[in-house]
Amino acid sequence: MPKKKASRGSTKKYGALASTKVAKAMHEFKRGKLKSGGSGTIVKSQEQAIAIGLSEARKKGGRVPRAQTNS
Image 1 (cartoon, rainbow, N blue to C red):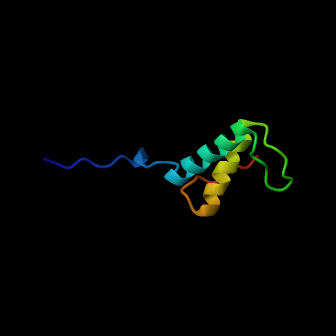
Image 2 (cartoon, rainbow, N blue to C red):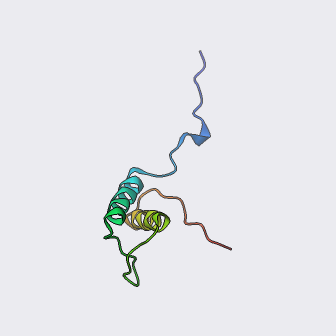
Image 3 (cartoon, helix red, strand yellow):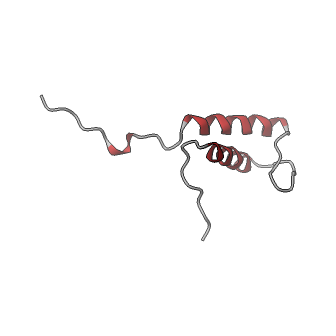
C-alpha cells in the first residue's frame, strides 16, 4: 500500500512560546497591569496586548510569523 504524503498546510503557524506569551500579556491586560514599551502607558486594547505578547515571543526566538506592515 502506498504511503500518504503529508499535507503542506499541516504545520502550525504559531509556536507554543507564542501562545504562552500572548496568554501572559492578556492576563496582565485584564488586570490593568500591562504597559507599553517606550512610553510606559497602560495598554487599553486587546489588539495591543496581543501584539505585545507576539513581540515578546519573537524576541525570545519563538515561531511567530513576520509582523505585517501597513504600506
